[in-house]
Length: 269
Image 1 (cartoon, rainbow, N blue to C red):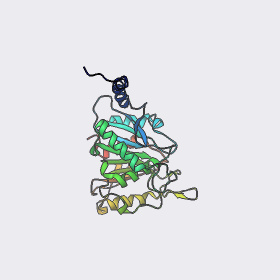
Image 2 (image 1 turned 90 degrees about the vertical axis):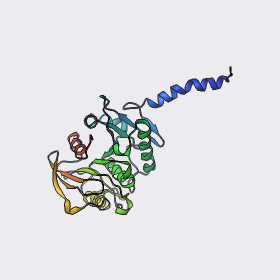
Image 3 (image 1 turned 135 degrees about the horizontal axis):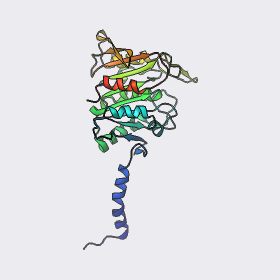
Image 4 (image 1 turned 60 degrees about the vertical axis):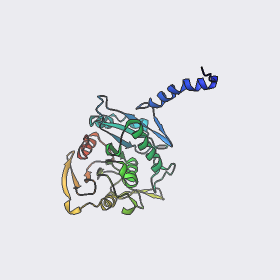
């Protein structure tokens, strides 16, 4: 019988525990990836048809986002896993934003790769979303990596000035629903200055960029009602509808809006 050194035997004995520990992530324990982490909660009935990857607002975190139970539970009701991605110190490092702490494109790619390897979530099963600056992060993710997502549902945040050009975004932009309030003073529809160096972008101008890149036929625009909000729907884009819902309230992301947005995007399939 072959004899192994004691150190090798100890390493072999530890390997199953290390692998098991790596799998034990979820809502309470972060799933580590290179450059950061995320948290995840799965539908308890086992009927899992995709994943909603959500970017939190300013000064929040993945841990705090998992406590926003109305959004989590609405996502699970749509047979989607809920993923809260963790920013750095409550912020995101998108182009022209106040924070530049991490290469978010690379980090988010790592999250997508881990979700595929660990849970089998392929691009056709991946919806992205976010609130406020987290919505901005989702918009830049769609712009830079839209082919890795099936749809986008966002609230109260868009691009920042200077806005990207249509050609800066990938051609395969996902279909989308965006909710924004006329009474939003934190991220107004027209945007606002943040200090002397940074400026939130205009929501309608940001939307026009995505619609131009997605080759939407504006002549086909129509009115639809989502969550009792009259929305502008342009159905004939490369991959599906581009929907903007402007409501009369403030800076918020509500479960009823999420319900309407996910339904409009065809989830669950």
